[in-house]
Image (cartoon, rainbow, N blue to C red):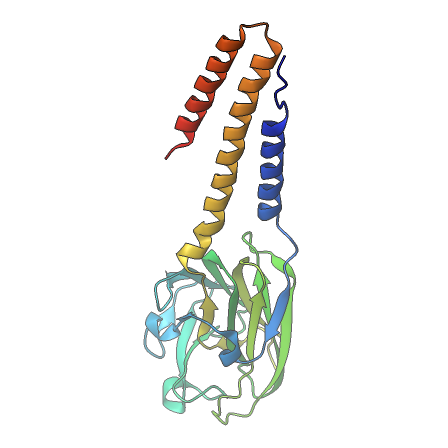
Length: 268
């Protein structure tokens, strides 16, 4: 009796499954602090000026689209009080160390931290942060997961000093991840001359991957699954033929018909 391969289909499916598991298994992400807007490499932003002119009261929370409309975001703060839109400058509500005329979002008192959540995960995000009170302060940025919890190893600080010089020296705090897993950013103060929950942030910079890159892995996984299914069908047909006491011509014809059917199923 002719010998037929008995395990090639199972082996192919097993290998394909292992590859898919390895591709989809979440490895521990690595996070890097980015201290300048230029080094963040952002492709989109949240311009607080889109929420209204200076002195506009902004509901807490507020949901809107980013500048390039790639991402929906929701901004909120711990207390139930509304935010206030201010711009850097005496006539527009803010005397600090952002660049002149910068569009800012202020907690409108001791109501922070400020949290920005996204409807899709990011690789990078960040913003300038400043305490309302004059004097030295330490600002913090924390990246959040889908549930709004801090991601391990994704919290960084930077020191600043509010001198009211309007010289664009408000510290920039950014985070870069080696995975697409940042669903939110929280901006807060570790220390300040007065209230640590009274702060303002500048435009939030962020990067969302191109849609084509998000689907590449999915198509690869589907291809592996299809290959495994095809090999499994072929293997089962050969095993049946090799274990049944059938006429050789009938066995060969049945196996060929089965393989042709499997080939037809795998055609697009």
